[in-house]
Image (cartoon, rainbow, N blue to C red; front, side, top):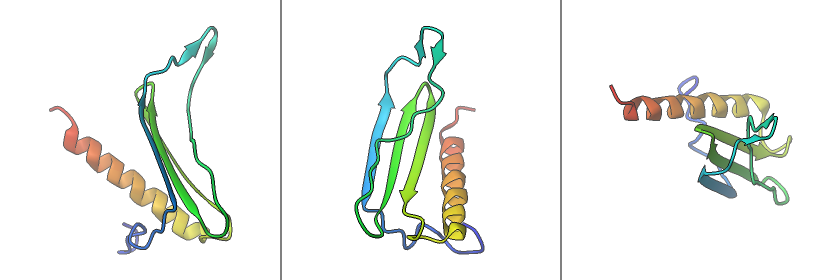
Length: 96
């Protein structure tokens, strides 16, 4: 939370894509896959989308919306809150 407000409280997500853990090669010859975002598409109007996947032992998260759909400050609060929640979840499941 930022400033006592939960940016998730009124979040209207129209698309959610969770690919889960992807068991794909992350090295292709001399090339190395560093990140993978998607799949995610936007509909019309004020639609928003969230995409999540885990590749190569790393979780990738994307939030997508049109520039006029949300103020940048709200998007930054959303990012901070999402990262905080992910950190808490990892801490809860860490082996001592």
